[in-house]
Amino acid sequence: MSGILALTGVNVVLMLYLFARSCIYDEMKYIFVDESGTPTIKDSRPFIVAVVIMTSFEEVTDMNCKISQLKKDNNISQEYEFHFSRNTNKRKNLFIKFLKENKIRYRVFRVEKTVKGDALQEIAEMIVGCLSKDEKYSLWLDTNPQLYRALNKARKEMGAKIKISQTNSQNNNLIQVADYIAGISSMGLKLEKLP
Image (cartoon, rainbow, N blue to C red; front, side):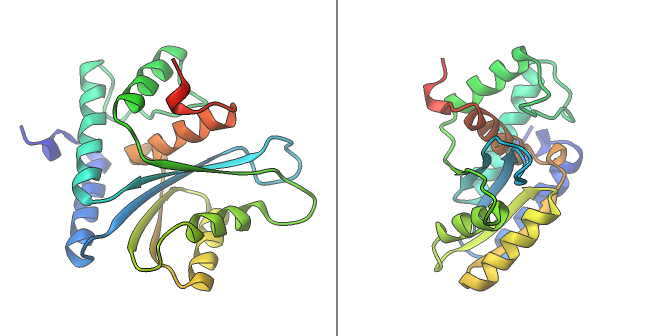
């Protein structure tokens, strides 16, 4: 069975969409974003955003297939969502081990919230600012209208070549990877340093 056929449901639709996009946009890079915490001052925890970086459509396909295989090998439904704050310790340990074995490229942005400033806009500007202006990007984030607006504003102001899309993280394995990295980082830990 080919790798892409091992995917099910919404992930197949997403993969076909990304493939069509990769045919249109030569050498596109793919970015998957999720956050931990809230950007409001009411919550004293820092606001953290994890950005997972894939350099090709093939890399996206490969990682999706590996996650589908992980689920299959562990008798986990393909529709199951790896979500850091909701998963059992057993599932957390399984997915963390998987992430460590696959050497994920990522960046974490952390904002200490103050009365002044907009944490979402600050994060959005950091994300867009770290991307090359000469490259084309497809950026996917969990459904978050405020962060979506902040990223679009930063994209326009900085002249970045980014197509920004939102989807429910349950439908996107790579946003689930970003969720785990954000969750781990929110605890003050680094993926590479976990046992």
